[in-house]
Amino acid sequence: MLGIMMDKQLNIADILEYAAVYNRDAEIVTRLVEGGIHRYTYADALTRSKQLANALQSLGVQIGDRVATLAWNTHRHFEIYYAVSGMGAITHTINPRLFPEQIVYIINHAEDGVVFVDLTFLPLLEAIAPQISGVRHIVVMTDAAHMPESSLPGLLCYEDLLQGQEADFEWPQFDEKTAAGLCYTSGTTGNPKGVLYSHRSTVLHAIASCRSSALNLGPMSRVLPVVPMFHVCAWGIPYAAPIAGSSILFPGAGMDGASLHGLIDGEKATALLGVPTVWLGLLNYVESIGGHLDSVDSVVIGGSAAPRSMLEKFQDQYGVFPIHAWGMTEMSPMGSLCAMTPYLKGADRDARLRIQSKQGRPVFGVEMKIVDDEGNALPHDGRTFGRLMVRGPWIASGYYRSDENAAFQDGWFDTGDVSTIDPEGYMQIVDRSKDVIKSGGEWISSIELENYAVGHPSVAEACVVGIAHPKWDERPLLLIVNREGATCTKDAIIAYLSDKVAKWWLPDDVVFVESLPHTATGKLLKTEVRARFERHYTG
Ligand code: AMP
Image (cartoon, rainbow, N blue to C red; front, side, top):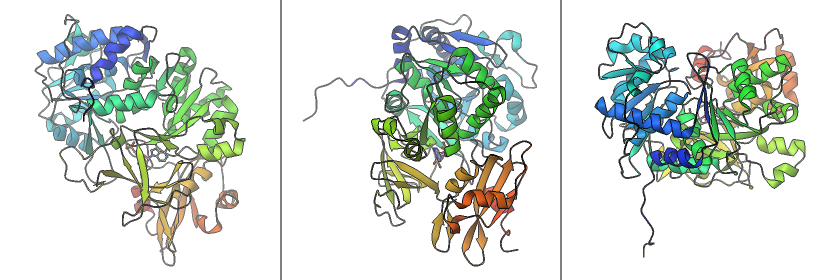
């Protein structure tokens, strides 16, 4: 017997319609790419999204078409999210940090007909223009006064496009499983793969994210997503914040410590979200000026493991509650996090940090299990580790127009991460499965070694890789970028690590380098490091 309830379909446009009426106190503040601060309300954003939808219709955009963005976190990008998905087309956010040939590949693979571009990224488009002939319109996200000279013919100006458009637009009604957003995930090998979000997955993810047991957003929150809108939709904040009634602070192109601190302090940010590298920049800056983060209640740290030293600094020095979170592009991205609990609140500092160093418990809607190579479920004892599998309504069930679907097995998605799960349900990432170091039949976690290494006062960044070894199969090699002005020796680092990990985990060598290679999403590019040091232990 079926329930007798309405079959109203979930739709992204309804989020902004709701916020425009009921969350009038909230504001959207943007540090403009052109300079200066822009502020307005959800009602203003709704009007302009409708004008944009009308404009897109006049450019011939139809339901199911892909509309791309190469853009920072700004109010205009926010409007594009709602206009494009609301009219039934698909918002395809492109990561400008990808290699140009990868950008060409994904624009052509997605068959983008329109590309919205920020001033910063126009040269990038100019360089690849001959290879993306399917793009019919390029819209520069600025006003007439800032329209640049360009080698590209027929550039459209965002503000001119909106000018004179009707402020009314009837959002079409469609199946909630209709595609709404497209984000390509770049592995370290092969072509990027497209994850195609639906209205249903996006709305459910947004509702789940803002709850107090997750990101804890509400009408009093002023949330600063430093995580880019071109990387998993800024972790869904452009959808979660209007539901929660929170104000949003968009940092534009200002991702450095000084710009972020200016926005945090000036606009009284309460909740921050970003990757560890960004927080390192912020913390270094705040420390250098003897500043504070007094307005901030919480900082979400995800995308890479949060080192314990970073958790300590936020918590002990600045009174900010760090929420360690884990997720993936394929998961919209939210999977698990370390929310505040009565136990955590009451725990002594050490016990609390031990838990916060883990990637947390799954939020409702995400199921997790760990399995061995044969797919057998492994115990949740906090020690046994295996391949982390997930399933849920906002997790991809395949890649867009791809037959690389080996990770999708029996209704579960193999995350490619290796982890433990403890009896309390806290998951801890041990490593990416391809990065875990196999030494003499045992496994060593490169992430854990890196996290300890960056705790050393002279270390700015650390990278551990497994290098072929004649006796042990693989042995760890530690690469270190020193903080500016700091000097350190291999012996000092090994001594520092000695009371933190088992003796056989200690790296056989430590190499000091100027910089480390990163992927377009800011993760360490370990394939490159491994290739460079391939023969380090074999000669
Ligand atoms: P992406 O799809 O680019 O967001 O990358 C997802 C991957 O980032 C995950 O599969 C993990 O390997 C890694 N990751 C994300 N969050 C964390 C975290 N808190 N700790 C360790 N690794 C993480």
